[in-house]
Length: 129
Image (cartoon, rainbow, N blue to C red; front, side):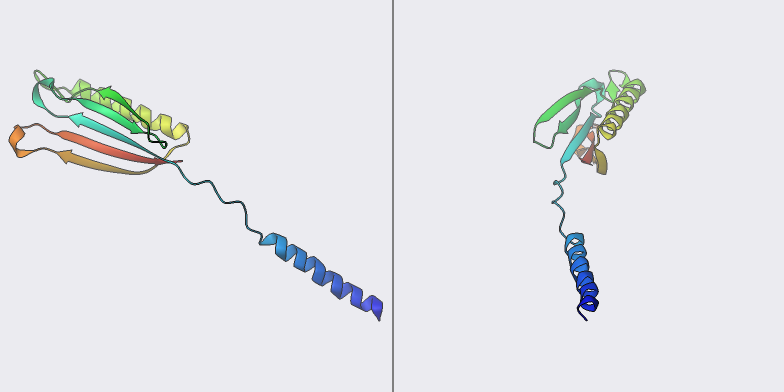
């Protein structure tokens, strides 16, 4: 009779051990980090505007890099727009290669009525790692 009890008791002990270890909570995942990249492109005639790429790292530090203005003294400068596009695409590709993943992008245009054709294009890229 004793031998017949050992097998069910062993099954209960083994299944309890497996059940307790299977549902043990894993270590909490590291909180995600975010980084924002903002491009500000000037559309002020005459090349007087300032265009930049502003990067805000996860720790709050910022860097700024120059972009070309959309306008030169003779009007819209498609060469400058092309240079900006190449710079921005290269930056986005590098961030992706570094493990940052684009979460969202937001586009804004600001063109006050009193500036006669002036204004800015601003795009914000939010990245997560």
